[in-house]
Length: 324
Image 1 (tube, helix red, strand yellow):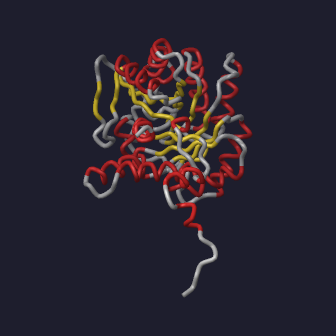
Image 2 (cartoon, helix red, strand yellow):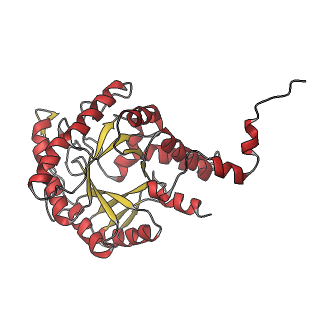
Image 3 (spheres, helix red, strand yellow):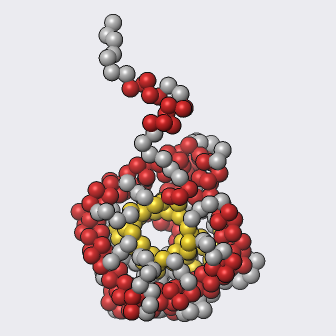
């Protein structure tokens, strides 16, 4: 009988030794929780495709953020559903817009919460695209001017970070210029540098009421088949002044996360998007999988691939699971 000389199982015999030699550890410090805010008072609209998540009015959003802060989650990213939409998404650039008022309310009630403002226009335009539509297309350079106006309002109301997600060419450089010229040179930018045109965004578009009214976003979001292009996009955003680089989605793009991690020295974020979340929830409700084990394996794999920061709808669940 063959007797193995090498025995890796020695370091797997019980939980204590497995903990000691574990290479990748998921922590609450890694997490950002996305939240959705809408107009009204005492509103808590369930998002059917994202169990456990809601559209909150500002008053209830503040209560939610208080709980999130008490749980130790260090940061949130906000997405707004305005009361009025128009072709230019003007609520997004209004100092009294839904997101701007939300940031002020949060900072007044929970000043230590790190608040990230998503920077885009798809939730605010009546056509659902990510900027100014001219002759049937999103006009890149006109949208850059809109993004500059938007981030200045975020700076004025106290946002800690801005996160441009629209995949406009030059968006990081334009935003950096606007922030610096208006006294917000200390505000970091987390760029959705490699954001793919993904089928995994469906539940989010329900939650944010941001689905395109015609066409799709393939003209500005990346082709899922491309990897080298992602590294080019990342390189451009680093040169333009991004402080954190994001890959979105996460699970189908672990190879991209790893390549980005191996290429740059900046922090790398990954967005564990709504479709990834919803699939786990749905299968768990059917009794087909163990939600906790699958979700924790998924998030650990994202971190193992190279992400320093994970945006995830599982954030509150993770805190509870880590404390069990």
